[in-house]
Length: 131
Image (tube, rainbow, N blue to C red; front, side, top):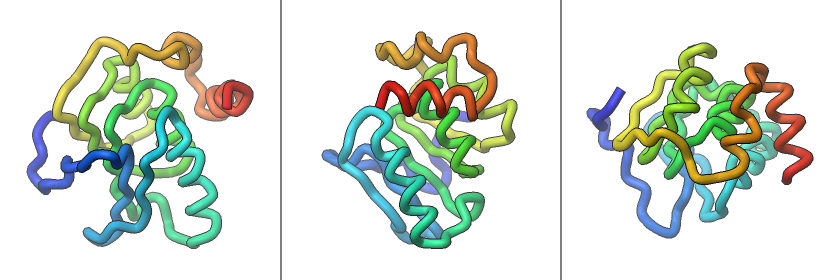
């Protein structure tokens, strides 16, 4: 789905990711690649927040990021740029999403590495090795 009816698709530089709960910022990151999503795993473990009750705003969401979002249990994603390769992952696992722009693919080797992967746990294992 395109558009931003809730006005959450603002991500001022240098932020690359922001997590909201009840309309308030709970977590943000300026890191690149998938590092903010790996950091979110630690954040959820330490904070006790239920990922399903949050809304994630990401700068770029490719297939790898989609798998990590699913694995984290986040159910609501807003992204500035969404890869068409990420869409089937989000839809298969029931993640609601909105984007401002859709691209065929994210120019990253990780996007190609996960092209044939269907399972979030298998994706996570591969991504941990690349990390």
